[in-house]
Image 1: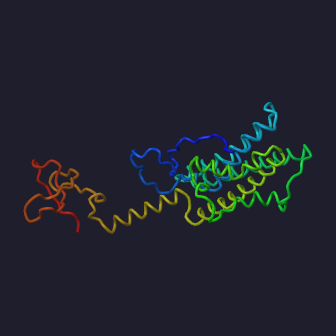
Image 2: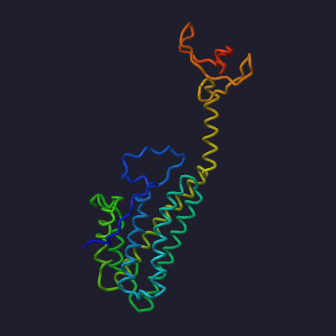
Image 3: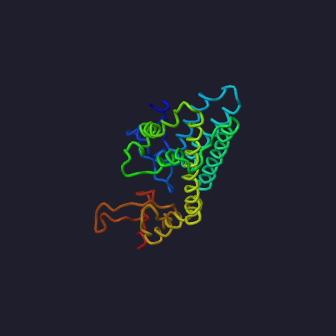
Length: 277
């Protein structure tokens, strides 16, 4: 059976989107960002979100406030992973905070599913139950898995949904709720790993301001080692009229092809200076 007929428009900040091949390339940033569609945490959170929307439509009263709370919590668990990935270019702290918000949202959703089972006196799977093990096993990548399962596009979303469809599209709400609980635990595990990696990266490399400062220091060092670089050289004053000079290149004579400082009022003023060696 096919999964939810959802589609995601190309996100210009997501490096996995290639819909606009004619667009001019963006300037290189100091810190990478985007690419969140390739994250397993985002892919798993997407399944949880789609499963929750279908679960609420099938088994809960649409007028219930719980429906809105569950759908919003599931959406937050997915969207904040994407927002954090986008924010990585300028703020590692914001990225970390948003991923933590995603983790907290899925914890809230987990409680809602547990409440559903408890209040209706439905059996909750133990982690060692065969059903729970079967669902959890699907979350571990295997070399024999088809490439569609790691595809970051909508094709991959459909393939991943189909992998869990026997449980998520089951007629018994207890089966659907328990299977989604397993998926939430998997998403939370992946987010815990992601948060730990972000924390280590922040400790090791610092945040955006530290990266910017390091780049500025490196550029100054480069300029110091190559003071004749025309892009970095500071224009001196003309020795005759005192105006800031312009960088010029000799066209003829013994110095043809070499750069020198010339007066901007040439030929009225013929002041010149050689570039510092």
